[in-house]
Length: 270
Image (tube, rainbow, N blue to C red; front, side):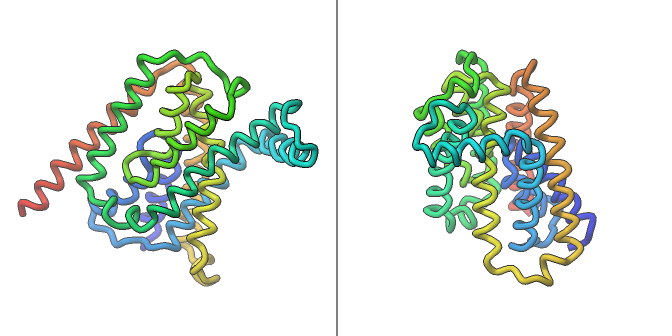
């Protein structure tokens, strides 16, 4: 892989990991569009680590409070007195379904689910679910009003993101909107619960890495690119949805699905 490809793929990962448009779909489709070689497992790990860094850095002050109060809640077996400790508990609960789904469907996620036409279908179908949940359901709750049922349902929704085209952030946001959370609060919680999932995926996938790969220039460029653009995506999406709907992402997903279908038919026709 050349440095331009690693930079572009890092940019795509950083932005699409947090925008509700499916990072997995874009990382499958971009090499397919331009006939690039598969960057392989090491580079995939680099991209995940980069977006994890962006999550940790952006929410650093909150993470410190969450971790300290969560540990205190575990020691005292009481989360009722600390909003941050309770939020930490909800993040853990919401992360469990995604981890289970990842282990159960790992083989399918790296095989049959990566078909471009299948991705086009999931992009458009889940775009419509996001549209209807954003447009027609009440959005009044904040994270401070969350309960165990809320976080469990959002976590189950997030588990569907093992399927390319669903979008981890998009489906978690959809689940939060269905539970009545405000647009910006839905996005924020989807980002927070991404950290354990991304960290777990990076650790799981890094088992076969060697030191020479980790120190390679494309690995470092991809990691830094995904970290920087991931940070910017978090910052500007949270700002955007305070006063705007998710319609622009719905439209983008549907247009991308149509483009995938057209290119697929053209390629198969030739």
